[in-house]
Length: 84
Image 1 (spheres, helix red, strand yellow):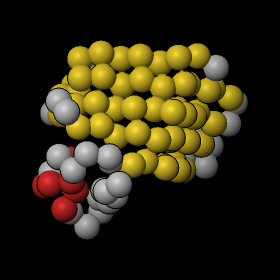
Image 2 (cartoon, helix red, strand yellow):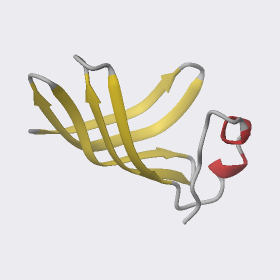
Image 3 (cartoon, one colour):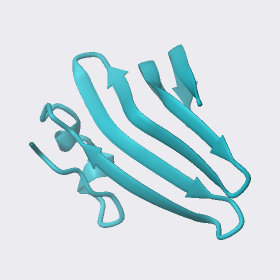
């Protein structure tokens, strides 16, 4: 287990201010727990689990601020943004 902290990054054309969380690596899974992704005043928090052998991912995420909920990506059928 280790702490992951990335600052000022860009992925697929999206800029993010910060990503942090606890990174757990095992032979058959990669887990990011208590994760927090920040962009401007928006924040997504939760847990992500990736199982490479099965090529599956599990998400438990919340979007506390409504700023990202109005994003065009969140309005597409394949994306889900839960307001809290």
